[in-house]
Image 1 (cartoon, rainbow, N blue to C red):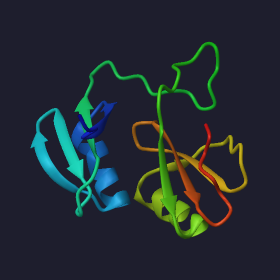
Image 2: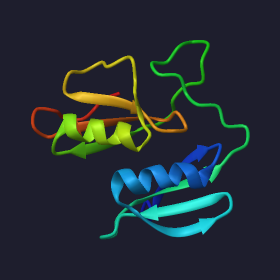
Image 3: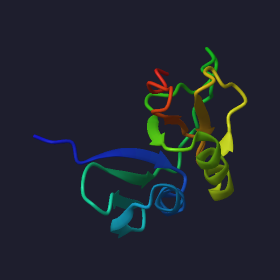
Length: 127
């Protein structure tokens, strides 16, 4: 057994997959109307996206009355400031709540939180 991909629901699978192609440099391996599967160019675990018409984005940070985040992506970067700016330029938005100085929480175009962190002083998001 091996993990092949994590799957993110979105109102438009292709739109969200396009964001992660630009952000991570992954390549499209499958592209169907409501399903897109991406893989890193050198192999490894991929990301898949599925169109879900009833998708409700999670609320960050969590609130008792909001849709809860069930998982998030941690993405290691070499330059936290530069990659945060690039993610925003590609369509992410910086979350208002930033719980750590050495991690940046962003929201992808569908509202999924993800964390950028650098090995230079950061151990991961721990969110």
